[in-house]
Image 1 (tube, rainbow, N blue to C red):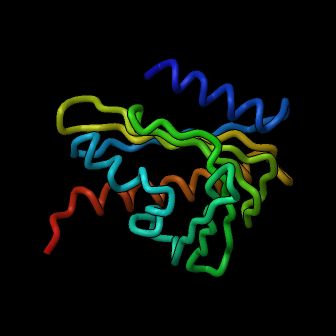
Image 2 (image 1 turned 30 degrees about the horizontal axis):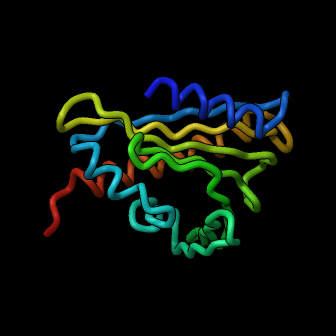
Length: 160
């Protein structure tokens, strides 16, 4: 598990270059690791739990899967999956197109069990900011925090 995180961080940093800014957010969720992975493991599953996402479509270029995420504010994210570890419950992707003030963006989302019915979900990235680094970090972190809170609410709220 630590090995995957170290490799993911190395991948993120190398993908983003020497001037990389980094963001890492996490949330604790009361659920099994399998239940949380079932929600986030689908590369387009983000449309079911992130409150800013209006829709998601995934296609393949023959080598990798590419998702197009349309945000409720009209923004568009195009992201290419670059690594997947279903057993380790994690995947990494890089940004192809984003409305965020970043370039050379690469991210990983991972489920870390901390008990039989409790997990941490980590969402981390590295990127080169366009403009002030603090503003880019805030934009990315705000997106992650909203998504992680949406994921927690979806998983921990019983279906009616």
